[in-house]
Length: 165
Image (tube, rainbow, N blue to C red; front, side, top):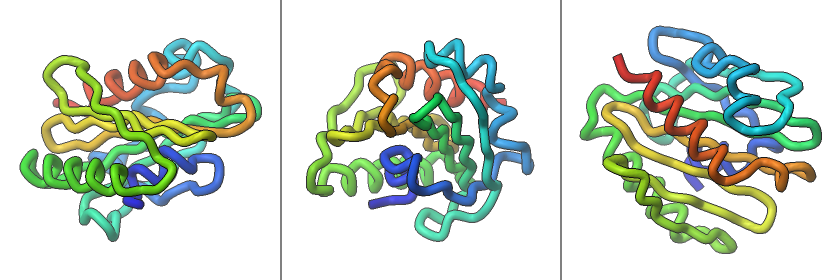
């Protein structure tokens, strides 16, 4: 499974090393208090990793994991040199998710951005492509049912908006 989808679906188990545009702390993109508002649950901590080169995609990968009690929500994004590269990685991520046993993949019509949901029995991730970025928000854990799908989608859309110059 690609690094982006893996980060979303296994955020409690794996914290990826990730790079951010200009070396910015990934958790500075969406501050903890704002993440709590968007997610609709208390955020008890945040941990960032990156920026670092993602070996699978060749892009710069950044992650911020928000702790929500017994669950975790990971905001992951990969920055590419061009929108064409980002689009290609988005399509590769979608194709890989579609071929992963036990994962249900559903396209999302959020407007003009290509996006999809990848869900399992224990986790969910929302992935979208915008300009030079592929953004995913996902999570899991015992308390993850308290986080709504709409909240995950809103966090991903807000992060994608803020990544634009």
